[in-house]
Length: 151
Image 1 (cartoon, rainbow, N blue to C red):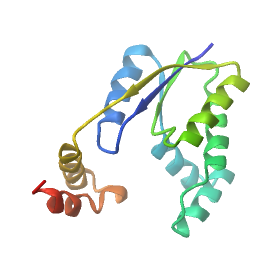
Image 2: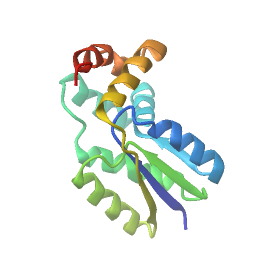
Image 3: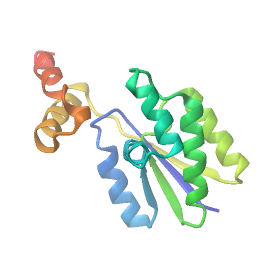
């Protein structure tokens, strides 16, 4: 049976960094939701095209599509020692979906880690990452940080 670890926390809390450290230490596959979704869209897979169609309209990708994607991810990694999920689940519905997916595949969630970081620190990290990495999802980070500097 594969072990499944979920790492939760707000954006910029360091989930990705911690997942990389844990995955190397345990020999688990690190699954970044954002990276996987970008890969699906770039490769123009069926799921990627569906995701892109929702995002082009400014809509969130429906939970049913994310459930299908994570079913595939679990199936792809069945022979691995374990996986670390970074960025999924995010909603109560996605939690329920993930539990359903794991039960249907005779897997189980082994551990959930929640990373808690004060809001001001998150905004500071967001502004820093926007400077360093120039990621599209960070483009408004500097303005958010500057607006929050007095709280």
